Amino acid sequence: MNKEIRWWQVVLATIVVSTLGALSTGLGKKNQQKLYERKLKQAPWAPPAKLFGPAWSVNNYFLLKALKHLLESDSIEGKRRVSHGGGIHGFVTNISRVPADDICIVLLSNIGDPAISEIAKSIFAILYGKEYELPKERVAIKLPEEKLKEYEGEYEINKDLHVVISLKDGELVAAPTGQKTDILYAEKEDFLFVKSQDIQLEFTRNDKKEIDGFILHQNGAKIPCKKIK
Image (cartoon, rainbow, N blue to C red; front, side, top):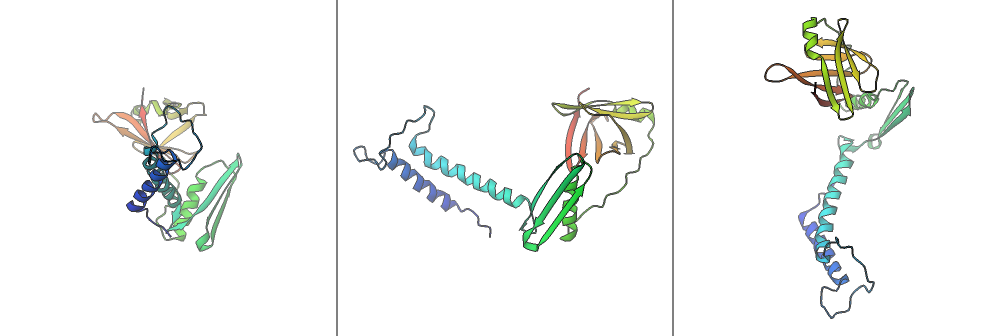
């Protein structure tokens, strides 16, 4: 059962905590005996006691909202989905369950491809009547060298990972930082892919029709990458 946090609950919690904070520090009456006799040493940056209640309440309100979002983010048809995956090179596993419907999916793979989790999501989509896309073989087309040269350059995926694309012997070669090179094949103009992994590059152009970057499609993610050279 999902219960929304009401505004009056936050206000009530603020009043209660503020009152307790005031009593514990003797702010109710100057000459009145404190509710708690323990003397506390506060750090110079500690907020006044009267602000503790509101700050505590606001902090916990957003903490509860974040926790609620986290719990609901991995669900299907409003039902909790529990999953876990892991492994080492050559041994990869993924197990996903929907306890409410007594459904369990176990996937085993002998290649280190993180797309195994996407396969699990597709199986759930089939079981629950959602949209899904069947894997398909990508067919490469031949582009003229003049067109391939437009994709040459250095692109930034993140500050520690760049990829240099160059034309060698009529083929585009991608060289990511610290990784082995791969040949890029054209599925259509401005859309290239590699055959060894589920990776596609969708190139983008500026107002002058010049290549200014690409969108990296990998394992369901779409990562914009800018051209830096």
